[in-house]
Amino acid sequence: MLLAIDCGNTNTVFSIWDGEQFLCTLRTSTHHARTADAYFTWYSTLVKHYGIEVDIDEVIISSTVPRVVYNLRVFTDRFFGCRPIVVGKPDCLLPNEPRVDLGTQVGPDRLVNTAGAFDRHGGDLIVVDFGTATTFDVVAKEGAYIGGVIAPGVNLSLEALHMAAAALPHVDISNPQKVIGTNTVGCMQSGIFWGYVGLVREICTRVKAERDRDMRVIATGGLAPLFQQSAELFDVMEDDLTMHGLTVIHQFNKDNG
Ligand SMILES: Nc1ncnc2c1ncn2[C@@H]1O[C@H](COP(=O)(O)OP(=O)(O)OP(=O)(O)O)[C@@H](O)[C@H]1O
Ligand SMILES: CC(C)(CO)[C@@H](O)C(=O)NCCC(=O)O
Ligand SMILES: [K+]
Image 1: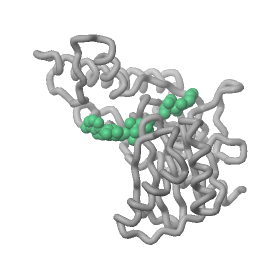
Image 2: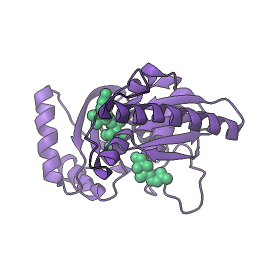
Image 3: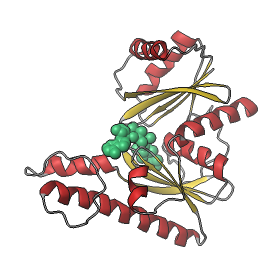
C-alpha cells in the first residue's frame, strides 16, 4: 500500500492507497519539530479509529517545508521499513521536467499539481491552488510546468490586515453578495473576497494572452468552491488534485525507476 504525504506550510495531509483504490485521508498541522514517533502516534490512532487494515510498503513525500523531510524520512524508515520518494530530489523522476530559469527550485506542490492536472486533463492548463499561498501553475501542451504566479493566500491576507491594523479584528473568509460593506467585518470580507475574484480573473486572462491560446483553469484547495459559487472563475474544481498528482509521480517512478 502507498502512503502519499503532502506537507504544506499550514497543513500536512496523509492519504493511503491500495493500488488504485483510495482508502483514507488524515490531516494535521505542519510542525517542523514533530518527531517520527509523534507522526506514528497520530497516524496509528486515526487508522485504528477508522478500522482500516493498512500495510504500507511505499511512501512518496512532497514538502514545501524542507525541515520536515528529515523526520518524515525517519518515520518512513522506522515504521514501514522503506525509503520514500521525495518530490524535488534528484532521485525522483517527473513525467515532464519543469522549464524554468536555471537554479530555480519550483515548489514540489506545484510540480505535483502539474503532474496530477496533466494526467487528468492534458496540457495547456492553468492550475490554481488556494493554500497558504495562492499559486498559479502554467502547464504547457506537453505537460511541463513552465512558470506561474505566486500570490498571498486568502487566509494570510485576512490575517495580515488584522496583524497590521490595531482596529481590524480577526475575520474568517466568506463570500459577501454585496461589495459595499456596512460594518468593519463586511468591509474586510469584501476587500479580500472581491479582490481575490479580480486577482484570479486578471491573472488567468493575462496568462492566456501571454500564451496566445485558450487554456483550461483547474482549481484546487479548500477555498476553491467558495469562489466558484459567486463567480465562474474555473473550468474544473478538484479537491484531490495534489493527492492524485502524488500517485501519478509515484507510478511514473515505479515504471521508469
Ligand atoms: N469556507 C471556509 N472558510 C474558511 N476556511 C476554509 C473554508 N473551507 C476550507 N477552509 C480551509 O481551507 C484549508 C484548506 O487548505 P488547503 O489544504 O487547500 O491548504 P492549506 O492547508 O491552507 O495550505 P498548505 O497546503 O499550504 O498547507 C483548510 O485549512 C480549511 O480550514
Ligand atoms: C509557493 C508555495 C509556498 C506554495 O505552497 C510553494 O510552492 C513554494 O514554497 N514554492 C517555492 C518557490 C516556487 O515555487 O517558485
Ligand atoms: K495545498
